[in-house]
Image (cartoon, rainbow, N blue to C red; front, side, top):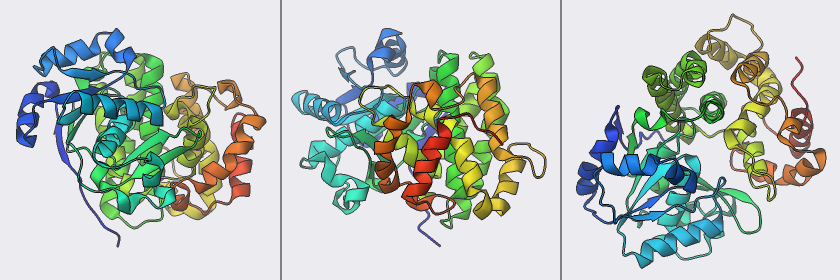
Amino acid sequence: MGLITYLTRIQFEIGASGLIPEELKLLGVSRPLIVTDKGIVAVGLLDTFMKAARLDEATAVFDGTPENPTEAAVLAARDQFKAGNCDSIIAFGGGSSLDLAKAAALLVSHPEPLAQYAAILGGIAKITADQPPVIAVPTTAGTGSEVGRAALITLSDGRKLGFISPHLIPNVAVCDPELTLGLPPFLTAATGMDAVTHCIETYLSPKDNPPAEAIALDGLRRAMGFLKIAVKDGKNIEARSEMMMAALEGGMTFQKGLGGVHSMSHALGGHKTKKLHHGCLNAVILPHLLRFNASSCERKYEALRAAMRLSAGADLSQAIVDLNADLGLPASLTEMGLTQDDCEPLVKWAFEDHSTATNGRPLTEDDLRQLFTNSLKPYVG
């Protein structure tokens, strides 16, 4: 049995943003840097949060988080933290802002270069607890980064690498479903499929962790029951709450490891010229990995079918294809603007990704090359 740890302090309720002052006080800090993105600022969500959280208008804000967080943005946030004499970070936004905040906190107290801390480069042991406190406040329901031990950052050389350590788990997760009420349908769908994929891939991981598997199945059950409702009616607070819990539960299972869907989407997420949404990539790739894994995972597939409310023996891949179609998501990587030439250089990066080792069925480079090729076309059962 592997190490089982759960996990960090979590405040989960409608209106939880109002608990921020209490959480800052408990951490013994008072000068946070808010790490977010320009889109959240533009729609007024940051102003709404700061009022609910009773934060001073003079609170430092870094809003330079790109769609896929980069090493350059991490360094800029770190520099603003130091210049402003900040003592903590509030990560406010989707997974990109949360991941960037974790990496910025790391480099506040750890020397550069950032690459030396990447998991596949032997960096896990180099990450210590000597970091400023981080409070994670998600505004989407998908990534689970608010309780995750990883940060995914695209380095200056184009590699999107995972930085993994229990010391990167935020000190507090403040989960307020009200913050997701204005999330547009496409982002609700794409981030929701990220949560679905987390629950499925962690459950299929060969690591032995029964509590994590039970949490993954519960998260999948919630997502399958409420994702389409949240997309159709974004003001439905029950659906928003259930999806935020599904995302949280997906993140709580990360210690089992993910799988090939994430290996491929991490590699694609580092593409320098195309902006590719991580959750959307997962949705497109997932049916192909489910077919690939089937021969090694049939016992677990029965539990997945039950959680997804499918009949015994149902085609899991087709169920995901049908769900993607209902949600209005793309059916292929080609539909997302990708070609075989785009994918070929990423095969090696996907194979070396930290998620590959815990796929439900062992993966080779040739397997991943074929999976990229298959994902360029709509799934056919």
